[in-house]
Amino acid sequence: MRTIADFNFSGKRAVIRVDFNVPLDKQTFAVTDDTRLRAALSTINKILNDGGSVVLISHLGRPKGGPEDKYSLRHIVAHLSQLLGREVQFVNDCIGDMALTAAQSLKAGEVVLLENLRFHPEEEKGDAAFAEQLSKLGDVYVNDAFGTAHRAHASTTIIANYFDAPYKMFGALMAAEVAAGNKVLHQHEKPFTAIIGGAKVSDKILILEKLLEKADNVIIGGGMAYTFFKAMGGNIGSSLCEEDRLEMAKQLLDKAKASGVRILLPQDSLIADAFNNDAQIKSANSNAIPDGWMGLDIGAAAIQEFTAVIMQSKTILWNGPMGVFEMENFSIGTQDIAHAVAKATANGAYSLVGGGDSVAAVNKYHLADKVSYVSTGGGAMLEFFEGKTLPGVAAIAD
Image 1: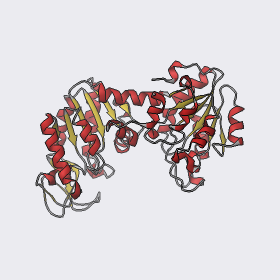
Image 2: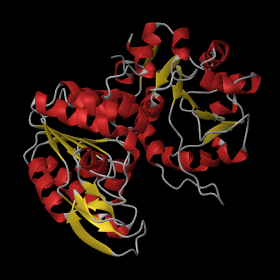
Image 3: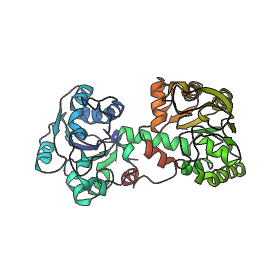
Image 4: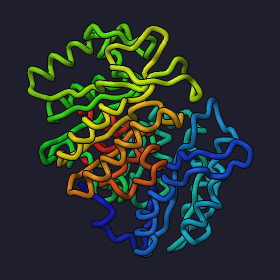
């Protein structure tokens, strides 16, 4: 795996594909969460400290049919300049004479950020001519955007074709993401426990199937658990259920049994009479929820059982919340599982947290520095654990 650690950037201009798809305030366009900006600093600073210069390319949001001011990367320039402790130049296009001149004019230690790649439809189409124009911006190509590694876009994959092997590499973030993923998937210590939550079984079928080949325990929480309970003949009231996935849920349970993998479903739930933080609340067995009531969080017995399993684990993967943790009254399950993962990590387990909602949870409870690794790539991490080849990784790994 070629990484920036093995390269001296002195006198070189690096074009870095970063993931600056950060949330902005709708009125002021100020950055409201700079996690992804901070995640890129290590790579940028390594290149600058070597005596190189940096051309940053990224997407922001999902613009349709051309430039939209609310998706302009110019909104993040001031914040990025502050984080880097130096002025970041900005060019309002990512190709063409203006972008090329700005890149070629850079001196050692200078940084330029180019406008949103997705203002050009050729980016998402993986257009070769567009990728070739981007390649002319630098002497070296660095991919540090794990969050887009599952997309075969021009700037994440096709551009690599225009650089010889020694001059295309992973950034520090990308290398760390791939290493963390490989550690969990291929080099894990046992017992290996996967905690899978979220709303829908359909979103997690592939990762569940893959984990049945790897994990010792699979904890299932969130709305998706009720599809399993219904598949087993339970009463789930008006809880979330994918009727068209009942047979798939049964098959997963049968496969787990045949593989000797323990699937743990929440034996009890916190239920409500409406999808509302102020609804009436009570506890119930998860397979005996009254009509008109819905499960919105795992219950006390489930928390106790899941915590015990987590504390005995040596490797932990967490993807997806245990309940509707955005509502305070249904956040206890997710909060307690987050603390259990942190405690197990302190006791020597290796823990990887990935997927937008799981990351939001560890950040909300100030536990990001208490787990082994927090992935920045939701969809990319999911596809990695599904066993899929990520085009952005393959483009450099080959």
